Amino acid sequence: MPSKIRTQVAIIGAGPSGLLLGQLLHKAGIDAIILELQTGDYVLTRIRAGILEQVCIDLLDEAGVGARMHKEGLVHGGFEMLYNGQRHRIDMNKLTGGKNVMVYGQTELTHDLMDARVCAGLTTVYEAQHVAIHDFDTKKPRVTYEKDGQKFEIDCDFIAGCDGFHGVCRASAPRSAIKEFEKVYPFGWLGLLSDTPPVHDELIYINSPRGFALCSQRSKTRSRYYLQVPLTDRVEEWTDAAFWQELKLRLDEEGREKLITGPSIEKSIAPLRSFITEPMRFGRMFLAGDAGHIVPPTGAKGLNLAATDVKYLANGLIEFYQDQSEAGIDSYSEKCLKRIWKGERFSWWFTQLMHRFPDDGAIVSKFQEAELDYLIHSEAGSRTIAENYVGLPLDFGH
Image (tube, rainbow, N blue to C red; front, side):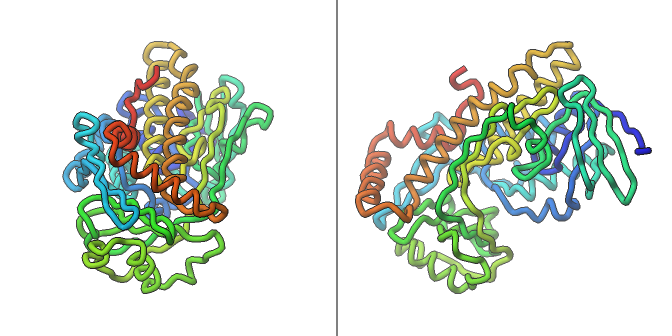
């Protein structure tokens, strides 16, 4: 017989979404257990997002884990767009009435959330095997798993699926009840992380005849660079020297002169896709973050959309336990999807604007050039980019 455990909310996945939800619930006095397939160290090796919107920053403060972020994170009030060999700055702060973004790596943020969880003495089960969810269409959902050869069963009120694109939660939803929308892009991003100072104080988004590139950063001493590459490329084929050489070819003269190269700490190729699941609630199970949607990384929306999912879900669950109201959990999916589709649209649009698609002829790069020219020289155009990039207000369109 499996060992029985009782909790209020079973959270599947100990990435940023699951940990943030656990922290917000803990602060509201709601009991939750987090299950994670991998080890904690493995979770920390996932080098992902690094740009936090104001809504996300506020949420981390609300969860009580923002201190190190405010100390070490870099506040950015704009970014550069480079095309036709010329750079143009989007002054987000000015165009949005004072909004900024924060450069703070997902690894650091995950660390802060893990530390807070350990400090509070909360349960996270790492290396949980054979996780399965049951009876989420009733008021008594269950989660079963194995750990160190022993079987366990969790009785809970709700299940939060924060287990990513390949997780068990979305896969367990009945096919007849789920609608999936997907666009797979015909290229990938080759990313390189290095302990070198960034080439510029702010990010540089590059549309070049050789393809897209992005000069990003994690700190004043750690840089993150990306190159658009064909899907057929393999990371083993790219030496560090070849990467730096190609980046220089896509940069402008100033960038080539200022670029400091060095050995890579990490190098990988990520495919790009737009993916949305409707709905994001199935009875007593909720999807949040990558379990419900994936964005191409161009618009820096992935982690930020995950954070707002978590905010809506935490609010709904707190309302359920404190006010005995189901209004919050009933509106969860609709609220999330309104915001997700806007973030997905911006990411899709920005990806189309900045990348070279293999089947596009010369006319499309001319269209891109004309659009970039309009966006840069029109205040309304620049504001469109800026207000989407910093993140639309939570109540936008409601």
